[in-house]
Picture (cartoon, rainbow, N blue to C red):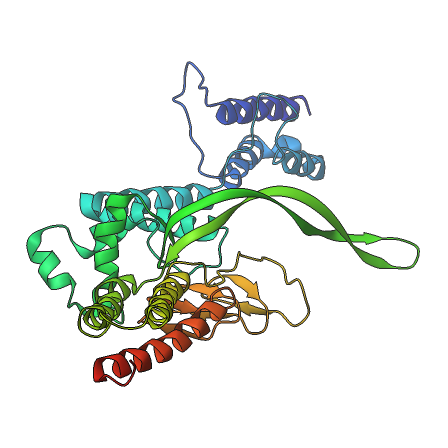
Length: 366
């Protein structure tokens, strides 16, 4: 018995030294890959030496050997990691290290840009698609040197804007314009508004009810916003209006009755202002809603938001527009809830001005 107890004490000290990473002065340090190997050594130490003297207490010794497999109750001893955990962590570290080492500087920079682009998309308060965060990033993606610029306006990845996005990148980056999807924000201001916030369901005696609170917050109000086709509006639509109106003013207006001149001038000015109200105003860009405000709302995957009926995601504008109707290249933007009235006035004024100019040039109106 004494010999067995002595050998158990020696094995227990060996177990503690192995777990703490220390070694005896006579023997080199022993490292273990797992607790299973450690338990095997302790059991071999108890069984191999003088097994004949411990035959009567073999069951007791084996029980004590099993108890030694548990970590001792000491604060300075942490459980040793298993060999599987160590191998997996080493493989992960080696894999990440090799992956980083194999990447070039351009690839690392591109990965960083993609991560920033994804974060900007998720953090945006507006219901927008996955686009470049700024116009500078749009310009850098298209290419900055002259050769890439000449190819950029006709590249396949710019369709269907036909180079308008590249022009927006050049102009808007120099103007410092903001970006919401493919819309360029030229002017905005902060306004104090009241909004209803739906909190988590509150359980009462009758059941679960939804609690709504009203809070006052500052929000950005978009005042001047142009769509992705604003170059078409600026360099084609407006020149056509000014060209036809100028020709009428030079050839047909002189010598006409003052009332007729006033009517013609009012219609022409109304046409110009209506086009500005359509192409340079917010068409109804929605903010992002993580939860539906009504049961009829549906989820939109492109913008990661819930939207009401009638609201749609416009791929050209890259945002969700309330009561979206269509995208008009002549006005340069999408037509929605907030600029539909101005668009209808614009179409009506085109018809009136066109008929009046034709009649004045033909001499039918005196």
